[in-house]
Length: 54
Image 1 (cartoon, rainbow, N blue to C red):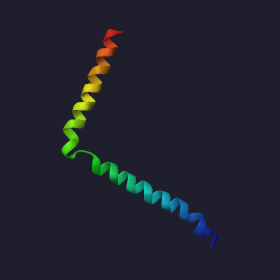
Image 2 (cartoon, helix red, strand yellow):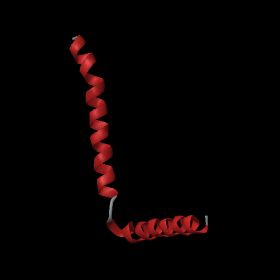
Image 3 (cartoon, one colour):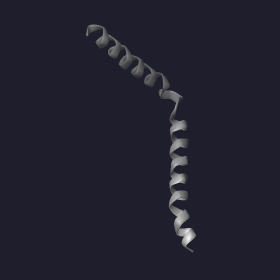
Image 4 (cartoon, rainbow, N blue to C red):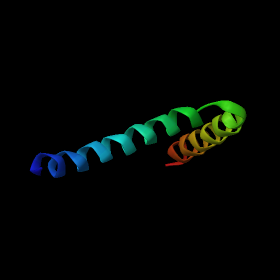
């Protein structure tokens, strides 16, 4: 039964990792996509403006 105790932790971690990836993929896009894109573009523009001033 040592093999069971050796295999359980990696299997549990793999299951949680798959769940995490599925959650991240599902949260991409949707109704908040435009708001997220606007926020990213604003941050990018602010960074570019700061680089020009240096």
